[in-house]
Image (cartoon, rainbow, N blue to C red; front, side):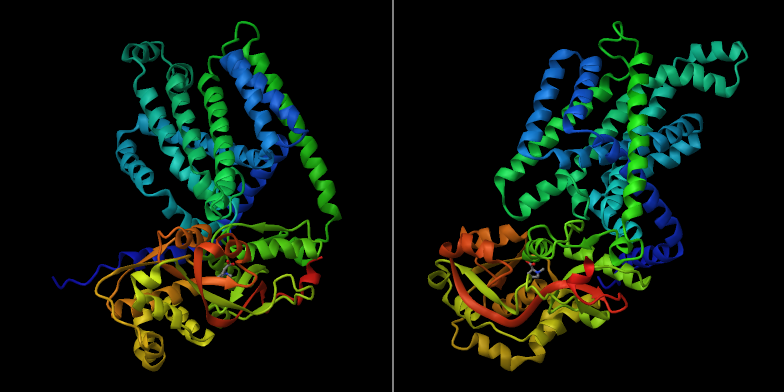
Length: 576
Ligand code: PBE
């Protein structure tokens, strides 16, 4: 069949590009609004010492769901504090509460509208189906472009993913109100709004609350996904654990999520019919809670205003909100940046965890608007040829000096596939080679095409790598890599070369820790992305006895903090 591919992806790209520019004002309004609301919620939750919130939550659980669950609540929350996940938990609860609040504010009215108008329901239902089945990851991509990286795109994506049950259940609840009650209301001459607020909504409340409960649980299930674009909290802890293959941390953070899920689930399930409503009237109990929340919020806002006055409003810190845009939590560069923050005494700065792709998107966005931004950067990288950028001077040498990238293979590869082993061993090229592949990929070429193009243009180099290597006869070779632009380029090139020499090559994209661990335990045959001696020192030291280090395939890399030329600071010291 020779029908040209429908450029659906390109259409979506240009639509999103147009939205990003045309609606920039709207998006930054939403970003500030959601960011501001989240700050308030976080301040309320962390207003006092942890024990205060623990007691309040415990009382709330006892009141709504009886004392046995109260005991569970206090014990599980104390365990979270003990394990050191309290701050992350607060961040997570705040994110979930805010997403929940948004689904209520927006979802219930839409649900009511659906119940009242069949046409609306007919339009909304397929949209909801679409929103729920489209993998939630996909929302993250435009969300980064619209709302930048950090917590806001995470909240928006969670909200889109979570809103459906609230809308559906509101609609259902209202439609299920018995016909005779509606007729009676009509017979007494009630207006439409009297009917809605006095008959339909009260009768539908249990169903609506079931929807809200589900929405909140869905929002909680999004926390790990949201951390890929920089949302903090327990989700980020889990992501970091995966990235560094830290089983213990993964379990602890995961367990904390489970505890929070149970607590939030029970509270929202029983909110309407508290177990001890006969002891204390719900009105009184919830008024006390509301006063407490309001009081803390007001005190928090006042205290917040006082502290911001002290900050230098025009400095680079204030302009970037003291945020450095980072990459994958397990990357060596992240570790180096944390060391640098310590070395230079920059403890009021936050390093945002996310991914290389999210970092580049954020850079692109800031660059277009000529806004100040600080990123964690490395070379070789195409971003230096696409944008005017500079490294911040690192007088204390926290980022180490020039490094090399090593090829590392599993033990036993030499015996099993000697040809592949010697090709990987002889693989070596220059930063400029790597850059030309990277540039083609960023310009829209498929990585495998770009690799092929480079191989065709550099037959002498390639023949040095394959020199004397015996050809394979279809043996499988599995290379692992992390989705850094550098490693995408090198892995595809060497993968193609191995393929052309008779091997059946699979490339598999993983996180940093798994890349090393995979080669060490033999589930992968090799990788060409170990930055040494500094960047990946920790992983290298953990696994060096279980792998074969074939030495450098490229010299002259660099890591550091990077800003656009138009940002007028020159060294890391200037961040003080
Ligand atoms: N990097 C690129 C990696 C190594 C390759 C600098 C992002 C890291 O920090 O681990």
